[in-house]
Image 1 (cartoon, rainbow over the protein chains, first blue to last red):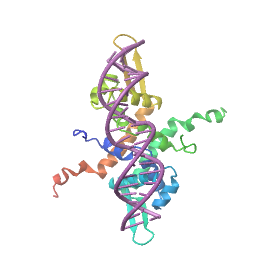
Image 2 (cartoon, rainbow over the protein chains, first blue to last red):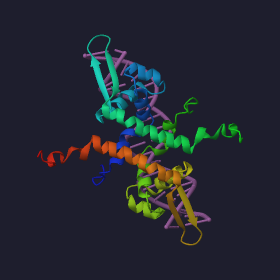
Image 3 (cartoon, chains in turn yellow, cyan, purple, red):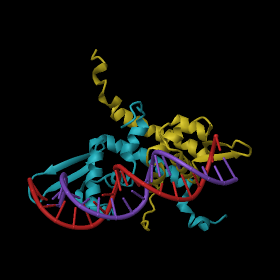
Image 4 (tube, rainbow over the protein chains, first blue to last red):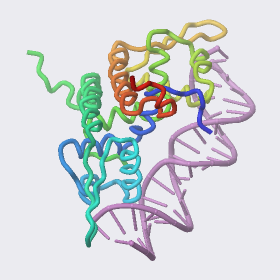
Length: 115
Length: 115
DNA sequence: CGGTATCCTCGGAGATACTG
DNA sequence: CAGTATCTCCGAGGATACCG
């Protein structure tokens, strides 16, 4: 069972953002509406099932909006909610912080000449 | 094997911050140096093994600093690196964003009178 | 006390196939 | 095309025990 005491926003939000896909999906939806199959192509290594589950999770969290159009073949589009769009720069900031801490994973470390 | 192409800072940083403990540990170290056993007490549900692993991960990521003092019984202290301290407000911002999106998980929703 | 190794379990996540 | 169900499997993570 879940810990009854935990009412920590960060702990809660990390349940949604943790894992490989959530932040990536948010990025791919950053400024584009995408179809389910688009997201699969954007991310060739995510499985059909996981993509559906992760999108559901983000939708329930109020980060992603799902819009389905009647017809055949089916057409479903995903984009960020206003809240989702507010999240982008916050995640970005963490990405920048990381980039600053670990520039290029050190591989081309001495590429920048001393003078 | 890992995806060779992926050089996305967010994807990388999420490998470190994903999961239940990393952000919590950062919080407990927010403005206090703690011993291993302190962190276990702060967080009764983390296992001995996982705490060690997560701390190692955060240490390798340059977020947490480990200081061990010779002697018996052993004494090891953990605190945030400068980079780790810079991270705190960024994670905080995401927590606030979430809190704003999902105030109190709705339980005491109508506690605030209309007028 | 702090860390690691070993064992074992349970559920996260892939593959596949079916439905609307 | 999008989504769900079923089966399966692997590894994240708990419990325990031992070492420095």
